[in-house]
Amino acid sequence: MRQECRFFESRTYRSGETVRKCDLDLAPEAPWRCPDDCPAFQPRLADVNWTHGTLVTPPTPPAPKAEGIAELLDAAEEIVNAAAPGILAEVEAGGGHRTGRRGWRRFFGRS
Image 1 (spheres, rainbow, N blue to C red):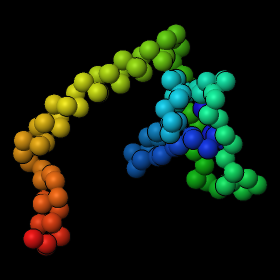
Image 2: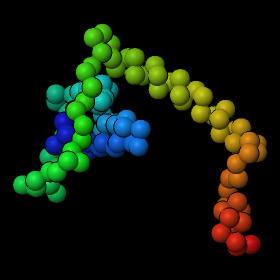
Image 3: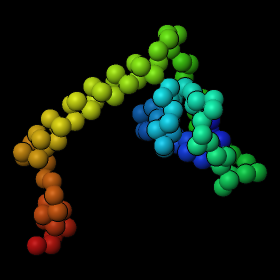
Image 4: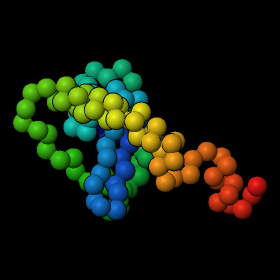
């Protein structure tokens, strides 16, 4: 991915896993590649001439050696999207977690 694009985002978790993505969701083969002719590409302006320390984004893992990476990622996204309504319904039905504003008021001691 183009790390110099203003829409590139990277986040490293405590486990060491790093997420790389396009904030505009315009990179169908993320985290490996952005489209060569991406119409939204804009260079970052805030870090021009900065010297980066050790908190630089870790290198991107090698891309799978298969064709159709975008299709594979789309299929994975469809699986997650299909599961989401059921998970939300379970949580809203009282699956052990407080949801909504009332739960937060109780947590912070407000009525």
